Image (cartoon, rainbow, N blue to C red):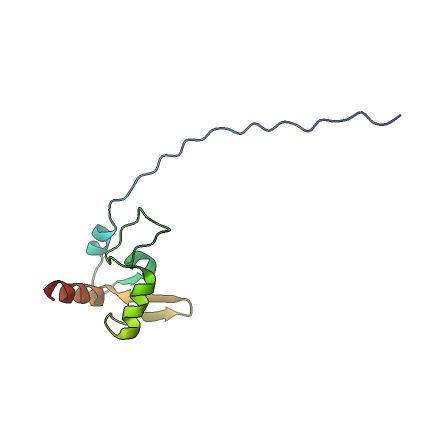
Length: 101
């Protein structure tokens, strides 16, 4: 005689409510960094993948790299094999120069 059919246990998923806090702008975080600090691309420019994350520069990563290539934005520093960053003081100087143009 065949073995009786065993039913798999039913899994009931719990409904979880996640509360998120939207940060208005990362600009204030940028303003609090010392001039000697380094800032990475993801903290510097806006990204459609992170719409709630404000950034001090109003353009995308491809535009940032285009400006670096054209010499209209400071060149980044290679901190390690996979880490590239800009000095905060150089970014601030560039932003000040853009405001006076």
